[in-house]
Length: 81
Image (cartoon, rainbow, N blue to C red; front, side):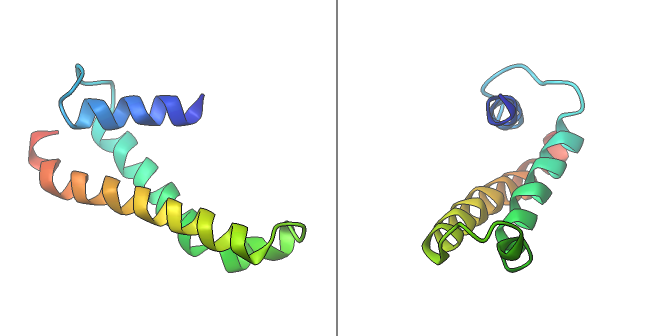
């Protein structure tokens, strides 16, 4: 459900759908969460010891790509938001 809402904010920021409340703030927070998750995996690994190294690298890479996509979109559209 959270990812669905976040996707809605991404679409609103891109102008595909009508603007949602607090779009600029929400997109900034979403971007920060994805990027934080991408770089925090060394700190999270001990909390979830059952996850493999492959899992951490792949999931962190996915979060990094998504977070950077949000960041690029924010930088390009900041004035229009």
